Length: 230
Image 1 (cartoon, helix red, strand yellow):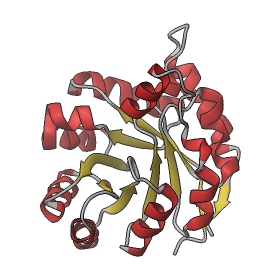
Image 2 (cartoon, one colour):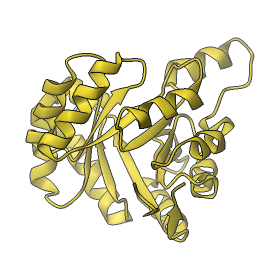
Image 3 (cartoon, rainbow, N blue to C red):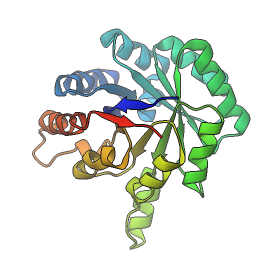
Image 4 (tube, rainbow, N blue to C red):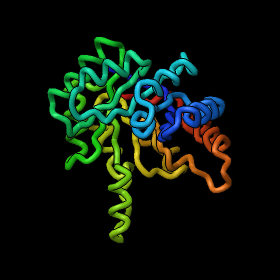
């Protein structure tokens, strides 16, 4: 069990071209980002080769492979770990045996497992379930389509901050908040007890100065120091 964890800024490389992903990753590193995520679009476009290229370019940086695994858990996790991923993502809505397979592969090949509660009817209970099955982290995630679909119906767009505190309090492993956070909301995440912060939308700026915005996010989040884990 982790008693405390330093605050972490992770950028999702939700791109479809490895050259653009490498360029963005280099900029993020200059700004002070801690972890890189090979986002689902990048994995779909470039597969294992994209993760390998990131590992070659950034040999000492944690790399999350956002597989969103639903089946074939052991093989998917094994492949990504061998390609250089330090973390892999499995969905809470996968079968329990799939989550266990990902956890087992993570242990066998030295990768940490992040369990994603996107789309779960009870997101707090899903977080507990992921922890019980052996996941190392919980991703508390409000999906892109869900947010925009609800907003299009004239309702308030849901946010991971809505239940973030409840999720953090329900588990003893670190929690990451993902999904539509503004710049200001992303910076608030450590105050909710979530040591990992990520949101692609938060990094889009009106003036186009992405690096400066990322640097500001990193400075503010890192200022929280260590966060106690329940």
